[in-house]
Length: 271
Ligand SMILES: [Zn+2]
Image 1 (cartoon, rainbow, N blue to C red):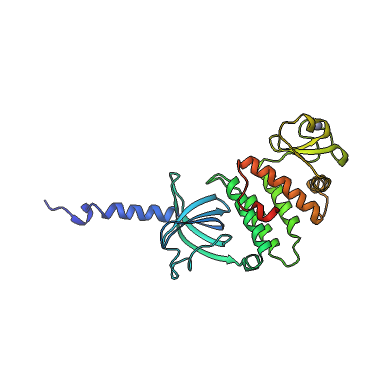
Image 2 (cartoon, protein in one colour):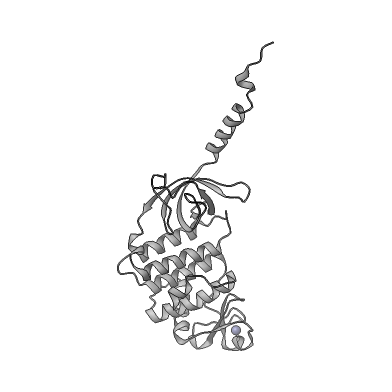
């Protein structure tokens, strides 16, 4: 009896099966680079926010070589077309190919714009659990970065809207129109006094006095939050620079409380 060695070879069938498996699991998605770490002299671990798979951590083998498929090391804010093999076990996935399709050079050339953009991606990276899809948040980030790159962008206002919508989307922010504790309407700004991160919203004067954790609001912050509440109700509004900065401080306070630590880039943006 003869045995067909080509079929009995221990490597051949598993290798073909593995190849088919890899081809089947490959995903192609729009993605934004949130974080990078050196893995070795030539490789990186890259944390991407993908539109349909949420945040993924990938090993980019050889990405730092100039002739790699990514055309050199992948940078923060890099945005484009990502091909990857997701991890099945919570380990690192594998980057197959990444092509930048959106140029963020206007953001990278201006320190103020760049810092705000870096804060946005740090916030998203900290808020998202891995492999948890949030296409609306992806679009929000994509649009905010694009707006920020425009010459006439009102930078603090772009950041304020981004923080507000991102926190709202994740479910961390309550209604801004009413006291989050007693429900009294805050449309009359005289009623608003503080923001409670634990309760996830605005507090009226009476509830603020009794709240153990709260941030007292400046008149600019109250005005800014009232403007955001109007935007929430569908009104077209605009935030002045001082109001937007005050709102950014409140929302950054809230984000840091929820994440459990201040964001590294917060000082650069809010200082
Ligand atoms: Zn109240």
